[in-house]
Image (cartoon, rainbow, N blue to C red; front, side, top):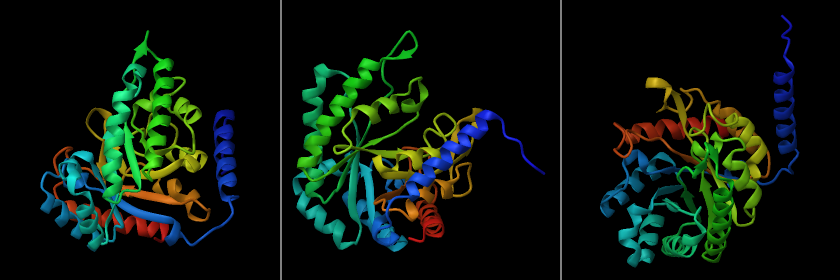
Length: 306
């Protein structure tokens, strides 16, 4: 049967096709296994990881499961900042490097920029000594005026992000901004301001494909259109839960088309990280963290070949 599309559906389909075509026009580069790396958060085991020996045990598990790096709350690492070099050796001896610490940043108030940027710079410094290559920050919902996004606050945040990005670059790190729901909620959305007003040489995205599901643009379309700004993907899958709130589930078992999200990356020159975000009842650990992360790693291998 011939399917008739309305004008809106046709326009959306054409836009997505053009974005994918443009992405596949990238020159082919090295094999996927050299460009696309797979890591995971430690959130599956709880937040933060309070004991250093427990963190090392977790890294042994991750190595067994085939993960190349880990991301964790900066609170898991900060107590050990004075022995950063020792930590780096311990991590790398387990064949699981530190990809990035994850922290929040309060950057929408220019009056507090200096203090906040110095705090973030300090974390970036000892994280780099631990072997990190990226630095991930997220932010709370920005102020609103008469129900609308305070665009001046968004611009101040972008300015602060550029300054943090410069500080990270001096430490040898890529600054990545982790997206949540709030960046996609408004009209115009905050994400548009951040992409427009941050320097692509200083600020990348850590695109969480699950946080904005059902609110922001389709994850596959956003991936195709913005992959050059995305250094780290947070891979998760969700399904409707109580009161319509999404809940985490096994990769491939939920509502997100993960194959479509990663498809533009596979045969292009994109280089970066696919990081599993498979949480339990945050901040508590999942019921069976190792089993959950094993399923995620197997699924990523199936859809990417890496």
